[in-house]
Image (cartoon, rainbow over all chains, first blue to last red; front, side):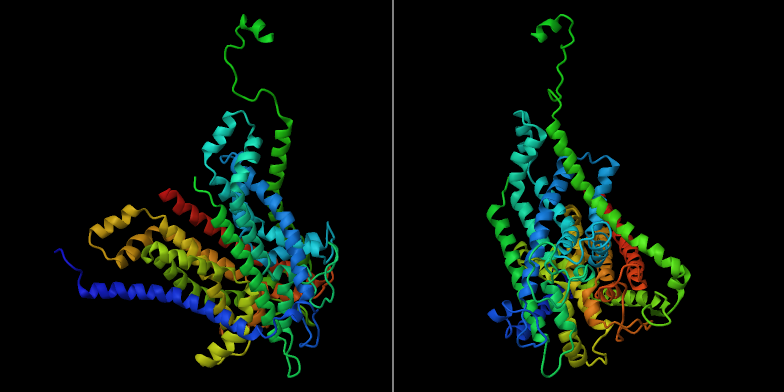
Amino acid sequence: MIGRRPVARRAQDLGFRLVLLACLGLSFLLLGVLLYDVVRDGVGHLDLGFLTSFTSIDADKAGAEAALWGTVWLMGICIVFIVPVGVATAVYLEEFADQSRWWNRLIEVNIQNLASVPSVVYGILGLAFLVRGPLSLGNTVLAGGLTLGLLVLPVVIIAAREAIRAVPPSIREGSLALGATQWQTVWRQVLPAAIPGIATGVILALSRAIGETAPLIVVGAATVITFNPSGLDSQFTALPIQIFDWISRASNDVNDYRPLAAAGILLLMILLLLMNSAAIWLRNRYEQKW
Amino acid sequence: MEAASTTAAGARAVPTLGPARRRWGEQLIKALLVLAALLSVLTTTGIVVALLRETVDFFGSVGVWEFLSQAKWSPLFEPPSFGVRPLVVGTLLTTAVAMVVATPLGLGAAIYLSEYARPGVRRTIKPVLEVLAGVPTIVFGYFALTFFTPEILQGLLGVEVSIFNALAAGIVMGFMIVPTVASVSEDAMSAVPQSLREGAFGLGASRLQVSLRVVFPAALSGIVAGVILGVSRAIGETMIVLIAAGQIASNSLDPRDPHYTLASFIGATAKGDIPTGSIEYKTIFAVGTLLFVLTLVMNLISIRFVRRFRQVYE
């Protein structure tokens, strides 16, 4: 029989489609409520004074200056560390490594696994090797930045590999045929073409690093700090750490720290939004179709 | 010229296609690249060494059997007790709650995106899911404690829970994991060849039947990989649980009670500046080892499953 499907089956199909939409709708609803809740609680506190004063017992005077600058320092250290190391690893795996060798496959599986090691475990690594032990950097902003760098390195490597793989082989072959060495080909042809993809990956990695709290707690970011970092060996706090401190403080009638936490979260989300917009803009502006 | 003198001997009759001379600069650069790649191996080694060194030390003063079998976790009180079971119970409980939320929602989203949504709709939905995935976990923790427990659980649904409870932490964590489950399983479903769908449609199957009886089974290994990856994230999640689930080691199987997990214990204990070599310092590493092993097993299983679906269709 050819014709329209029976009503019962069409109803079933429609019902299933609605269930699927409800799954998505519920997730979006939660995201919406979450954003609404944070904005409602925090928008009253987010002003210039919040950005230019240090944390304090007095909730009305407290701000996030030290935390903001701590985060800026952490991101700076992170970027200086992850860009060269991440890109070099990606170039090695894509352009030089012989994939049939077991050690190269081991490096690949290892990076895949590192991408899903819990962030708090990276904190333990930082505590044992960077803060104490062999490097003994102490509870410094350098140790914190490097710990975050190790944490997001797999993100950069995976994104950079994809960007490098997307450069068509004909570009490499043309370059090699003209007598360029392998490195000249990579440096002058492949990498310039892959820069937009790599930059997007780096921004995404930083936007993961900026919100990480657990590893910084473990490597000993301080909560009550009333000065900005002055150098790599300076003690530090960071936005998520400051937020966590405000959430965990007992509020009373005089001092309510919850709105401070919400304002800190708003600030963090605004930074994230800016970074993600930059990533999307880069992707759309410079993406090459071969 | 040299070439002229060798033609007679015939030694240069077959020209080599290799480089004219060894380029030491190229070799040096390659060595540097290898070094960068080795850093990731070194990171894993570093994690394992850092964890094991202190863990072995820890088991010098606390028996392995005591650690694994005793039902009480109170390392900082006198007399201390080092039974890790309550932390494991808390971890499994919050993970179970999270997966009850994340598995159906994630798979539903994946089926919709892969089988139902038009390309334009996909392009708008996927970035929103990415935003959900990009929200820092501390924000979810704040939301679970200040909104989800009081307004939704206690208010809207009327569940009798204390302000710190594993239920809210688990549910909010589940929403955090939805994008992970959705994106891995959607990749797997999109990799199912179009010809399978066309065959089923040709035989008169509805979209529902194609999704559930053709695409779903064909993509099963990738879907399993996504769910396992979600479990691994739930086990390792620290901040949501630390903020919203309370910090009380408990063997209770009731998610409405406060709970401590492996990860939240590490976060809470490491907060103070604890002296190297003290028993608190060592417990962090012992608990960390357990956490690392649990997530490592999950990740390796997940990687294996992803390989499987790639091998079948690519």
